[in-house]
Image 1 (cartoon, rainbow, N blue to C red):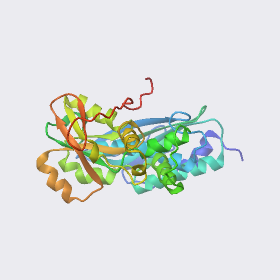
Image 2 (cartoon, rainbow, N blue to C red; image 1 turned 30 degrees about the vertical axis):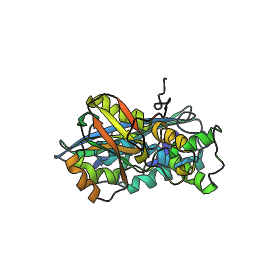
Image 3 (cartoon, helix red, strand yellow; image 1 turned 60 degrees about the vertical axis):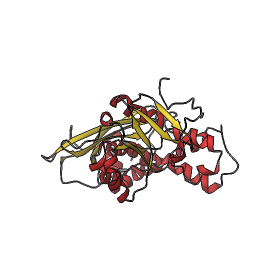
Image 4 (cartoon, one colour; image 1 turned 135 degrees about the horizontal axis):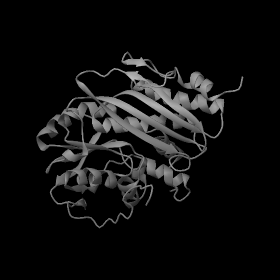
Length: 322
């Protein structure tokens, strides 16, 4: 029997994710009905991924399902929220059962890791695009915001930066250093196609953080959003920028350019008051202190001697309409 709009929802998505007790009505009605704890607020974010812009048309649908949900989960992590529910709007050029099965599996596997349930959505025909709206729960008054950075806060980064950008440049055939092995490229490609939402780290550092953002458009661009919202500046120690073993193999200037200005890392950038630094260190997490918030409303890059660097970064981050 041929698939239809409604049969594909039932076959691939209605039971794709685990059921939560706070979902009163889910897929199958005009709206989902959800129960929110009295001590919590709801954090909501939506992202759209478009073929040819956010991903290549021939990308593995399993990894696309993962990434489509991961980018929203990363937003929840930046707010200090825990995942609860999401909706999916899927526009397809055609109905392909193998593609749908793999896409749903990639999405559902990540959903299971973070106890988030698919509760509704829509399917239409057209150029391939995926919109996912995530809903998370955050204790009242405990949400993280971009506007709360304070002078002398220490700036931290999760994971490593620039890996996704390196994989993208290789795929665009504009850059392919011979020093990187097949294993290096496999690692970098996975970082691009299957980013890791830093939800666990977010919850552990939540009590100590002033401001936070996820790095989707590049460190300089996204840290810049914190600084603009907070009316502050920053000093960044280039030697402290976390680079993966693969990226450390290439020319250092090129590696730093990728780390500072390329997007799709979906790591977290957050600021911590100096008095909380010992507590942050005691957590023993995959995080790195890279600089400090200042009163001067600009970003200053410092070299290994603590002096302003001559590194010239012409790309400040991705902008759809620039």
